Length: 291
Image 1: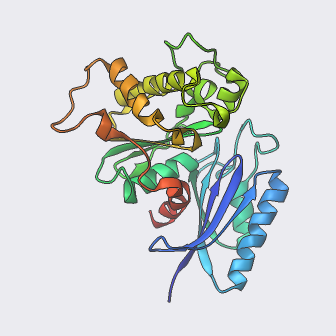
Image 2: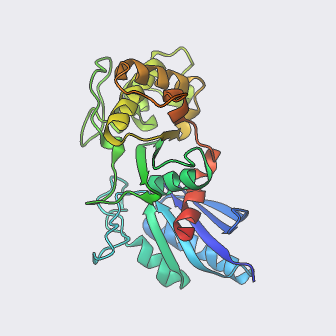
C-alpha cells in the first residue's frame, strides 16, 4: 500500500502545502498567504482534509516552520512559535493545532534546519558531516546539520542575527540588533536602507556589492565557527545574477588564506546554490518525517 505524507513549508509570507510520497514526488500542492494564525491554519487544515477525502490518507505531517520555535520535547509549549516579530504569531501552538485538526503525527523543525537536512540527504550537501543552509529572502535564517542531525541546543540556530562588522557604507535596520546579517542583507532590510525594493535594483546598483560584502563576511564567520564542508545560500535575494560569485570573492578576501583546504577544495566548492532549487524547504518537511 502506497504511503503518503503531508508537508508544510511555513514561511512568514506563504505556507506551501503539499502531498508527497517517499520518492519525493509532489502529488498535490497549494500555497496560502500567511495572514492571521486562525485564518492561515484553518485554511491549511481544510486543504489537507480535502486531500484525505480524495484518497491521500496520511498519518504523518512534516512541518518546516518559521520561528523562533520551542523545540524542546520536554517543554509544555513544544512545537509552538515563540517570540516572533511576525504580528499575531507569537505563542501560537501550531504543532498541536495541526495534530488535533488532522489527527496525525507532526514532525517539526525550523524551516532552515529542515532545508539543511534536505540538502544533506538529496542536494548540494550530500556526503558531508557539517553543512549549513542559509535563506536570504524577506529575512535571513540559517540551519545547521551535524552528522545528519539538525542542530538544536538551548533553542536552535539564529544565524541571521549574527553581528557583522566592517561594512561602514550602510546601517542595519534590525529592531533587535541593528547590524546583524538580517538587518543588513535581508530583502526587507535592503528596501528600508535603499528606499527601493531589491527586485527593482539594477545589477550595477551599489547595494549589490555591499550585499555581497555582508554575505562574504557572514560566510567567513560560518567557516570559522562550524568548519562546514557545505554552505548552501538560497532564498529570493540570492537569485540575483552574480551575487553568489561576488559573495565567495568577499569571503575569500576576508579569510585571507587562513583556512587550509583539502586538495581540490576551496570556497567555490563549499559555498553553493541549493542542489534542490526552490524545493529545499518543502523537501525539508519530508526529510523531517523520513529522518
